[in-house]
Image (tube, rainbow, N blue to C red; front, side, top):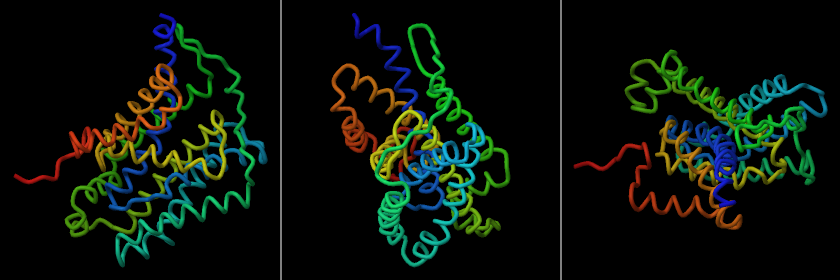
Amino acid sequence: MELLSLFPQFLANGVVNGASYVLVAVGLTLVFGILNIVNFAHGEFYMLGGYAGVTASTLLGFPLVPTLIVVVLCLAAFGMLAERVVFRPLGIRDPSNAIIASFGLSVLLQNGALLVFGAQPKTLRTDLANVPVQIGSVFLTGQRVLIVVVAMGVVTALFLVLRYTWTGRALRAMAQHPVVAQISGVNVRKVAVITFAIAGAMSGVAGALMSSVLLVQPTSGGMLVMKAFTVVILGGMGSIAGAVLAGVGLGVIEAMVSGYVGNELRDMIGFFLVIAMLLLRPQGLLGQSTERS
């Protein structure tokens, strides 16, 4: 009965973790769905966002909102730089080169962060971390609530941009049919830059917010990118709605497994779910099947 009474707390913890998965996975699925690029360095965008947040808050003394603005600008700029310097030149020659390059970029960023920031884990300290929030039998900190609120706001804003702006329509056109989109006048290079900027900014925000809950270190993006790929596969490759649903679902499932079964199985359950999904529904929860009758 005691474990059963902890169900709401486990659920809330899972939603918080799932919100961070959503922010990273949506950016990852945008890059794949629109540009057909598999970016294994995406977790390092998350890691750099954490360090950018710690630097802006600790060294520059910025409060939380300006810190997040700095993170968005820095990681959007870095995403555009990565697209221009790494992915665009190599992807034109052979799309598979971009996958290899992303591995190299991942190693480069990890070692660069180790040289610049050191191996000592760091944390983003905010006043909200000491603000208790109680909802019924659920206890959270203000910082954890903020993670969920920001994730909801960012994803909602992204859906509105994709649905109602010219840029959003261009992105959706590229995702649906690149050749027709180009014929219709869509600037492919501009779309690629915008896509990487959005993906970088979303991952950076997740890294900054989670660095106040979990410590940030040079290797903190490694496991996170595997979780993001798990979410993308479960939700359906290229499906933003699927990434949102699968991200929250994975976070909740992990929290339940950790609470009721054991923490050692927490990081394994996602891979079991991927295997089951590939066997039963290869296109994912909301992905579309590519099989032809």
